[in-house]
Image 1 (cartoon, rainbow, N blue to C red):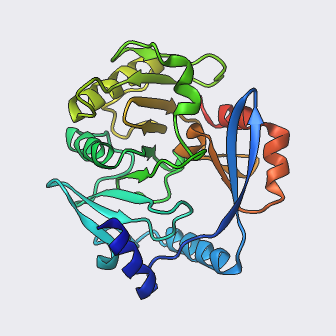
Image 2: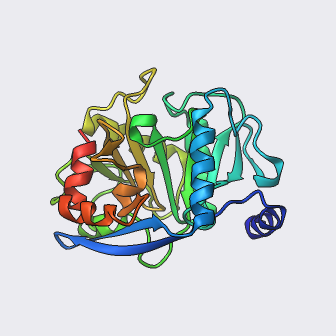
Length: 275
């Protein structure tokens, strides 16, 4: 179903995929992938995206473009394609009614995330507000597929393999405030344990889970682990960071910024935008 909608969206010209090149940077033994835009067509698409984001009254999710809709995900969410994907098969779990991206996450949000992870694996994530990397004010969770060497939590959770279920853990070597929680047992992903893991991670990091609005933060979850990182700002020295930075994936707009990432160091970059 997903691939069929993607193929038709390409034919219809509504899916504007951003072509990138990538380079690997290792920092204290942790591999990071850094992507940058390469083609003029992709740069035009990126400019169009930026222009759309500046139009405060425009909400691309209310309603979403019907040619980008994958389907319903329970009574409260729709799954739609990211119109400007840097990573292929990038999906968004969008609330049917407007809720701000800074609103607290509800049981229905965790249910949507759990269903997606159970069916597709991969990595789910949430940018809690503009200072955490959100580009749209309408609440949406996101998902990308697992790819060899791509964004993922395993580069960090490898040292936590013996960690008990539903207990917050700090991973040594990561200098920013964070909490990992193993949420899935033998029966696989479920919404209740995913939400419980989030509450435990919030408690461990001092993040109020029901604040309105929520302070900026990033949430990431795969089929085993959940990670919460409180945020202080969206960018450092002109390099923007969203949740995927904490899964080992960074994005820069110009190739010259690769040297800047290398000079700062990915770990220090992520620390600078955390709390």
